[in-house]
Every structure is written in structure tokens, then in C-alpha cells.
Image 1 (cartoon, one colour):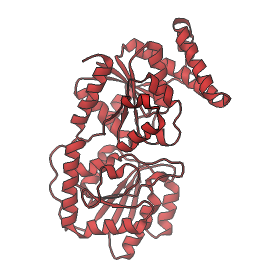
Image 2 (cartoon, one colour; image 1 turned 90 degrees about the vertical axis):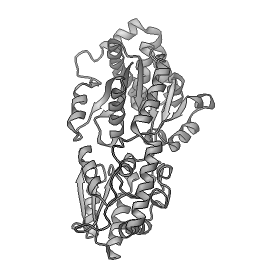
Image 3 (cartoon, one colour; image 1 turned 135 degrees about the horizontal axis):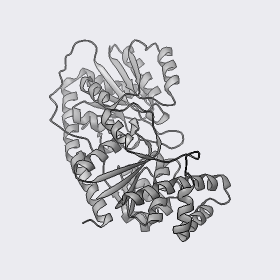
Image 4 (tube, one colour; image 1 turned 180 degrees about the vertical axis):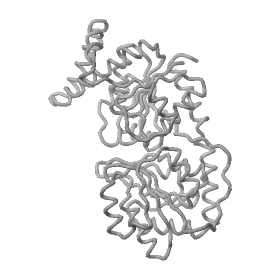
Length: 406
């Protein structure tokens, strides 16, 4: 089975879960052809760069033959082409700016359709319900291919567009969390609900981690990983770490990630006098994130709902920490409570409460028995519901059914 995977920016550090899924599908015998709207400048590992080199990227307006696919499909698929344009006009009238923007993207998507037709793909699957799904939808209609998409967080909580059209054409809609699934049920008419399937992201489990020592050389290391944006709550984390120091806990915090709030967070770190205790590494390849996890005593996430409604699903670093045996202190924002149950698989605090978050981190650092018990339970939870091989096999089965390969 040959599946076209349509992505936004690739490769992207904040979307390593997609890369893991692609690699596991290939291991299970599925041939994946990658398509991306644009390239990313993120630092990635060599195996990801190799796939990026084989990815088909959307052309820009100055590329030779940019308009050729449009002309070709107007000639070979005139009714589908005109119906797509009429649908866009109906969806966005009288918002001419959105109609023109989507008309531009529609033409870019036609280059995907031409390449997918050449590659003889059996199924088109898009990740994120926004622009990648629109590209996949256009291509699927033009080449009459089975089509599905995965929805995540921002794509359905902030600016969902054309959702009914996308759901009409899709034979399968994948939600990676119950939070995302419930949001899809809110957005879509009841007749489409049966298309929505919950398939959680997974992580490679490997060997069970050895119990962490409660005593180590130097100050304990706390790690936080995420894009530096509002929904990740990093200002709350810095404040929590300030309070942790004031309470006499000599810990060190490492933050891995980049994003629009980077400069403001560096300033805040200085204003709080945390330069010697908080290390901000920026974006790092996933292999380095894994290495840092192995030396961390606690993973902490200060997520919250952003002012525009954006929120986390189940952050994949939570699953990675649990697989590695690292205890977690997090907030109850978004889909986090689906995996972290307070005092069962980690410690939870309300979003926007730095003092509560600091207290939970302090408890994990000072109580080795508690930290080990929670880490052990979290690892068992990952093994039960978030094993990469098992969950990808479920996804592969759904793809095979949709593509008529079963």
C-alpha cells in the first residue's frame, strides 16, 4: 500500500510524532510518499533529513510550470475543478480575500495531485485539519483517491475552516486525544461522527528504565520541552522556579524549544535573577531531547489555554518522559489529564498557578519514593495505551480498510 502523507512544514521539531508515525508505518510495510506545503529550517537528525530530501514540496509562484497543473486539470477534470472553485466561493462569499487566498492554495494543491497521480498512491492522508487537509482534499477530488486526515489541537480549536467539506470527502478522521475527538464532535454534524476514530500517538518503548537514584551529584535537573508560545505557559514556569529557589530548593532548569516568546522569556529570566539556574537551549534535534530526558530528575510542563483558544492535546514529551521513567509535574490544561492522573501517573496543578506547580516539582525532587512510584505507573500507562508499534498497527488497519487493501 502506498500512502501520500500531506504535511504543513516538514521537518518540524514540534511535530516529531508525525515522523515517528511515518517511520513505524514504513517498518510495518507501508510505502509513504511525503508531501509538504513548505520546508522547515528546524535542526533535525540525519534520518529525518534523508526523508526531507525525498519530500515533494509545493512550488511557489515563480517556479517553472507553477500554473501547469491548474491548466491540466481544467482540461482533464473540468467539472471537479469548477465545482471546487464554486464551493470556495460559496464558503467564503463575500470575504473575497479568503476566496482568493484559498484559490491560490487550490492551485498549489494541484501540483500535489499531479505528483500523487504519477506515484499511483492508494490513499491520501493529511496531518492537521487546516491547510494540509485542504491540499489533500483538493488532490483527492482531482485524482479520485481515498482520503483521510488527522486533527490535533490548534487546527481545530482556533481557526477551523471548511470542516464540513473536509469531513464530507474524508473516509476517516483521526483524533489523537479524547479532547480532540470531542472538539471534532462539536464542529461536525452528527452524520460525520462515525468517521472519527481515536488513535493516540505512540512512543517506542524499548527496555524498561532502571529506577532513578534519589541522590545524585550536584543540584537536581528539571527539564521542560515545548514551543515557546503562549499555550505552553513558560512565564508561569519561570515564576514557579523562582519560588522553588526561595523555598530553598537548589535545582537547575533546562528549557528546550524556540518560538515567538523566546526573547520575552530571556528578559523575564534576567528580571527574576534566574540566569545561573535556568538554561535556555533553543531548538534541538530530537536525539538531544532524548539524551536530556535520560539525565533529568523531573519533567515539568506549565501548559495553559491561550487567549485565542489554543491548547495542548497530549504533549508527546509527556509520553517520552513516561517511557524513560522520568516523573512528571504538569498542569491540567487541554488533554494532559487524559494521561497524567494526579498522584497516580504524575502530579497535576491548575493552569496559571505557579506556586502549586512549584510545590509539585519540590515534592517530586524531595520524595524519591513518590517520584519512583509515579514514574513506574506512568510507564505502565504508556505500555497499555501508547505503544508506537501497536497504535500504528491500528492506524495501518484503518488505512488498509479505507484504501480497499483488506
